[in-house]
Length: 479
Image (cartoon, one colour):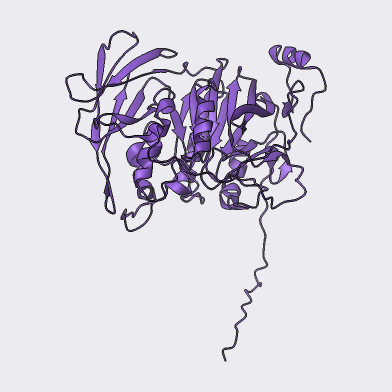
C-alpha cells in the first residue's frame, strides 16, 4: 500500500529538507483533505460562454489576438509567440529584457487554413531565440506604424536544465470554454505555475471552427504569459473530408495550424508528439490517437527519447497523454488499454515519475501501479480531465467499490499543480473549483524514482497457444 507518514507536518517537512527517502509517495499529514472525498455538491454540465462575453470578443481592429507562448527548443532558450489576426500584418515580435524598450525583433510567418466553408484568420508564428535562462522578457506584437492595436505581454524563461532547481507546473485537461472553464482559468492565473501542461481537448470546437477563435481569445490572458506544453485529445481530431487528411498528423489541422511545439528539436517526425527539458524535468507528450504498436514511429521515438534522458541533469520524467491508462470511472473505461500494454513496461523500466491524462471529466489519483498492482517503482497515474467543459463532470464509477490501487477519485471541476523542490521531492495538489473558490482537495508528496533503488520490472506475460490449436468459428444458418 502507499507509504503514509504519521509524523506531524513540521517533522515531515524537516525530513524532506534533510533528504530522507521513501520508496513511493506519502500524503501530507498536515492537510485536512489528503486522501478523502467530501460531500461537495458538484455542478452539472455547463453552457459555453455567450458570444457577447468580453472574454471572447474579437479584436475590433482585426489586430493581434489569440496569443500563445510555447517553448521552441530542448532547453528553454527559444520561445515561439503565436497569434491570430483578421487583417494582414507583419509576423514580427519586438522584445527585450527591459520593460521600457524593445531592442530586438523576431520575424516569423503567417498561414491560413480552410475547413469546409470556414477560412481562418492569419495565423502567425515567430520564434525568439538566444534567450537567457530564468529571465523575464517583455514583448509586443505590432510595430506601432500599422493601424492595429498593439498587444503587449511578458514571460519568464525557465531555469537551465539542472537537478536541484525549483520549478512549478500547472496542469489542466478538457478545459473547453464554459463559465466553469473561465473559473478554472481564473484559478490557473493565480496558481503560480511557471509552465502549463495541457493534457488535451482544448476548445471543444468539434469541427465548428469559430469556436477555436473564441477559445483562443478566452485563454489569451493566461497563455500570453505562461508557456503551454500540450498533447492532443479526441476533440482536436478533424480527420474527415473537410480536412482531406491522409497522414495521421493531418487529422489535427486546426490545432497544428494554431499552436507550436518543439517537435523538431526532440527528433520527432511530426508535431503531434515530442519532448523537451524544462528546468529539472523532462516532459514527454504522447499522442493517444496514432499508432503506438511496436516499431511504429511514435513507439520507436519514445524508446530512443527515454534512453537519451540524463537523470543527473533532469531527474524528473513526466508524460502527458490524453487517454488514461488506469481509470475506474464508467466514462472511457479501458480505452487506454492498447497504449498501456504497449508502453507500460517501457515507462516502468525507465522509472518515469508520473503520467498525467485527461479524457475522463473528473479527477482520479492512482497509487504507483504496474500491471494493475501497486509497485513503488512505477509511475504515479493522475487523471486531470476536469477543466470544466460543456459535457460536465463524470460522476459514475465502473469499478465499485473503489479499487485499492485508486487512492482518490472525485467528479468535480478543477486543475492541478506540481511543485518540484529539488531532485528528490515534489508536491502535487489537486485544486477543486468549489463554489467558484479554489480549494486544495488532494495533496501528495512525490519521491523521485531515480533516487529509489528499483529492481527491473517483470516482463509482461502474454497468452500462449499450442501449435495444434485452431480458431473455432460458429456460423449462423440463414432462414
